[in-house]
Image (cartoon, rainbow, N blue to C red; front, side):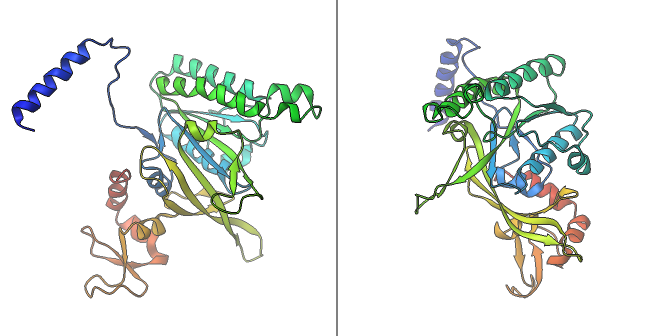
Length: 336
């Protein structure tokens, strides 16, 4: 297109925009993110938790979903923001939260009894927080979608279970259709956990499904699966942690299907650089071998962009601390 034609096109678009009401025509802005506090997880999501949108993390029990959410709350607090935690499972542990550095005195903790109360609570806390803090970073964690029952289920108990089939999915769908637009307007980050179920009748494709119907999957901008791998034992054979794999199965703001290998410590959570080595190696940023001899074997690794030193895998944390500009470069290229 010639320069004159381009100017004419811009002029026409400007005239068209003037004919619309300012409340209906939106300004296109880049997606903003809140950090989870873990560099590799932020990279896998394309920058972190998208502000004004919903992120869902699901997996089997004891894989570290709640711990990751608590660390995201801690990071928001450290940035001067506000964190709200909706605990439908009634399993919030102040000891674990304190161990990872979360300020439980400043955490807004709610324990609603049913799905209807969850969405009402979330809408109320958004309204009240934004009244006092209109611009502060704000995250709402809901733990979890799968553990919360509808009001009708509570009232009828175990009677007529077949007649209530689908009621939870209906309530969740209605609630998310109301909550997600509100979060977008008020720039609130939604971070929800869900439970994983195995479908024994399906042999091909995804043999799992999540609770709550299709609404969480549809409304989520990012969906992540967390899989536990191996237990970590100390010298007394006591389990002190585990390794896990985080897989981004859906991403509407960055390339999906990125994977991160994490190390989860039960006493202190997930370290900031956890999974970063394998993440950078898999993405081709780190290279194995001797840079000068162009070898691709051995236990030496190197970084291409202006850093001459090599290191062993066991010394990665030390090498990273000696080259702080690496973290800056990673943060600058997380969405690429």
